[in-house]
Image (tube, rainbow, N blue to C red; front, side):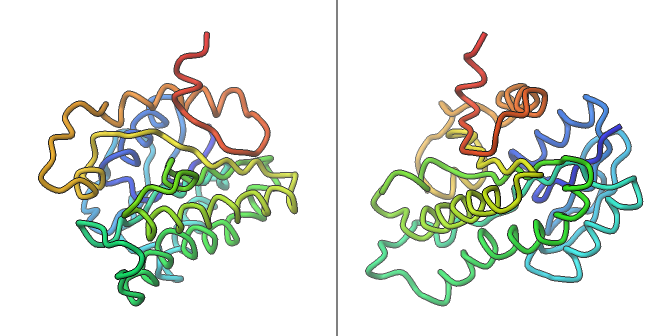
Length: 223
């Protein structure tokens, strides 16, 4: 039974991926800032905490080690920043630093801690990203540039450590609270629920393609 660490699993995409992996027989270590109970059934260790906290990150890896060691790290936890999002010319730099702290530095730090064990088991890192990392959407400069930074950090890490797969996983537009915050006051009910992309994520894990950028929509339509 493989072991996965999934951050930000209390709701949204993280919750959906945790459920899919648990149903597929994975043992899980999950976290969330507001996590109070185990979010899914199965062999799951749930730890409340903030990924920007070094002690919490160490606890996540230690919990995975007690289960036999992580085969997969899913860096899903993230923040959008202000809502509505400000243009870069007016973006408060203190807030931008927080966006980078959560979306760039924390996942990289967690990857550093998990990397030795992942390498031993030929494991993988999945950094959840967005098309805002590659498209210059007005108003998305803070979140988008942070996602671009973690994507490029992942590419460099993959080049340096070919013994571990490093994927930048773009799930597409989904009906989540974060996506609603990105479009305050708008109806986003036309977006698919996070659970709809979970089968594509499981296909990614089964196929184990080389490190790189992965659009789950491409896996979902492939036959």
